[in-house]
Length: 356
Image (cartoon, rainbow, N blue to C red):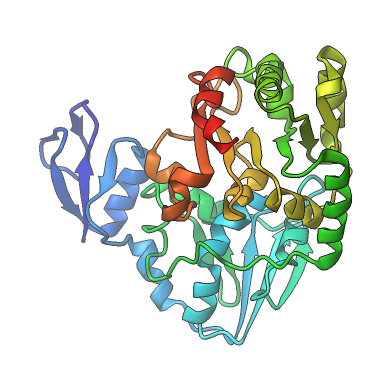
């Protein structure tokens, strides 16, 4: 049985329920019925206590795998959420080796990230496999392969990493082995930028005003950059993937480009992580890079918001959800979350100015 609490203000009548439930009421349901409720009304119900879902308990029924094989999404952020518990999964399954398969897509470099994780023994990329089932609850499995999409499981069921596969322990400090060659590349970059650089992750979400509309425009990004430069004297270093070039070029054409150092497309993932680790601050839309920035103990400001202005918010502003991937002792030191549609360059500066 699973305990659920009804948290909506609207009274509800549902097939599994006798009568009408009101806000605050706690009910006991069979796990398949609880899953049905959470799937249909994800904003109306929450788990009571730490009692796991049936799909969490199923992990104990998965046969132990001497050679554990895990399939993950192609995004660095998605992989990061998984890595918080992946080493524990390897131990739980009593596996001698861990092979990770990532989706092969041109715009993401999860493969490069996986290569930096010491406890992953081997890796491959494949086109065509689907994470549809895993996206519903955060994981699924066949007889010889576990599919994991932790981010979706956390977002949909419980809104924190503790309630997703609770049998597994969390390692907020999982190791990332940055090669010496990447550290040397970061040295060269810092000779150009100066010590303790200030980074803006130049995602198209920040530089393309048509995406975020009035909620956060390219102009707002430039206003924040100019405010930081005015207060600190530092230029803003733009970093990101080569496919952001068109947005960066247009952005720099429209602003005073002398305030910026454009390194977009000029760093690989290991050298970018080495640079982030030695930076004073990074600002960006919520993404894999900014998630990893907090992991590397670099003060990081993240904008959470909508996919586009015509859709409902893609990520609920739930403190458990937006802090569950941050080490508890780092939340107040390295992590500054903001909301599209509410925050401006001034409110961002007011919260992060102590970093400088």
